[in-house]
Length: 269
Image 1 (cartoon, rainbow, N blue to C red):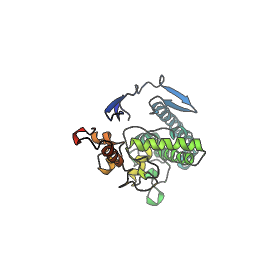
Image 2: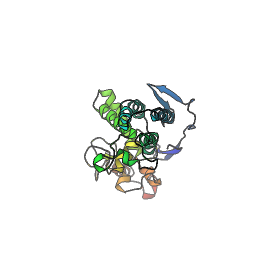
Image 3: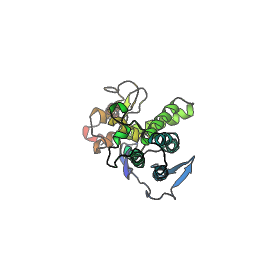
Image 4: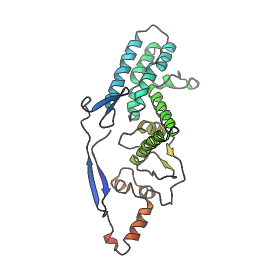
């Protein structure tokens, strides 16, 4: 979840400067929200109003489907064809974390168990595991949202110039928030952070199955583009990591060149 934080920058004379970033009240669902193409967008870019609308829609859909006299196969097919697609459209634009995505599945789990005549205490994982491993092979709504988000990003990278630039901007923001390199031509991995961004749910999902989202390119190790925090193996979001997050190995060389007449005590902090 986003919280107030200080943005550390350096002035022209390399003096440290702190900028306080504040977020508005989370529950201001109406004064700070506008709706565009059926998506509720809030000023904090958290999409909490859209999340509440999506959860309410899921609950209403599941409540109506619970009383239907139909087999579990028909119920699951109808859910994938209509409600899932309708709810996944706004969801793919939202920076919800992985837990938020999984919480959307709770009413759907209860619906499936009702029509399958399973006990409420039955394992949720058994509903979605492949049949060859003992599951029923049903579809997660949360997974469909994340897959459509990934498909949207992939299409954006292969469309016209303006769309590609906008999509790359979102991906570069995700890299910067994870304190990893965005230099052209160098490989870098997307890392989890405490600030919501478009890849938040995807990063957590891929890491849970042993995969890592990466930007392709040459390895930055031992090159001028390697971040200092990565070279020093600093803990992400630690105090010194925040101070060095935008510095590369070249920073040391630049400082030593421009300040070669000064003593070590005179080097900027």
